[in-house]
Image (cartoon, rainbow, N blue to C red; front, side, top):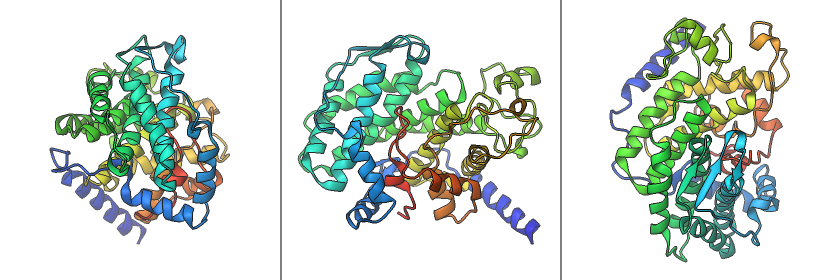
Length: 388
């Protein structure tokens, strides 16, 4: 029975992968459609207004955060300079936090219908679109990805749900097209979480701009990078690699995988670095998969969904306290996965009915999921047990 079920799952997985169209962009883009849809927003709003948990608590947590403060003053810069680990930090923190605040205010507007939040989101987006021209120094690609992942989520909600109008939405679109998209669309051939976050930004920006060519390019890169980030036994003796990275020997691949030479299903390229950076990569995989689903192409039934499921389960097991075996990262893991499980758990467990024991336990333990202060925010509110 178990073998039959496994065979059926494998057939479904392969069929899903083969069904993926050569051109990923929809005939017409769905709005709002970056990570969160109108139906998901409506469900969250109804649950909050009904006083139901965990959504009510998640909403209260969001509203009490600094990102929802109506007295927030935007701090735009013409050039944001970010070195390694944001040293120097010349506008890096301000940009990320203003982008997260715009998204937070957009969510607050949608749930409360209090126009002050919509106007604050617009104020933040207008301030940056009037000023920013470039990102510089070594962390410029990642910084652009982090902020670029949040801006379109905010913009989608405001442009398509706020009846008060947004006079400078065109200028904001120009900012995304000229400052952000060129930096993230081609990747940087760096660590997996960089590439996945940059690709998430490229996908979200492409939706807002209704740029089908960029969407297709970003989605193709996303599938390649996801396959090279999460290992499945079906990949063979060694993980998949990305063309152009010169990972043409086992030794080079092991070094790129943080010195890990034993490959098991669910391991990621950064597991042995730490679970925090691993969480960034996993989160971006879930965000892009969710955006794709909203846009009409469900990746959860393909290898992307399987890699996401296995990555979540593998990392969750150790985050919950399972002893680390000696063959894994020398017997020691740096924990701190972060608030990154809600989107994948909801899509794979709640919608598709797949058992995810460890991921479910960690998801419920961490509720309400807050923000990582970079590009992940309020996902218990938007995706927790959300059937939409």
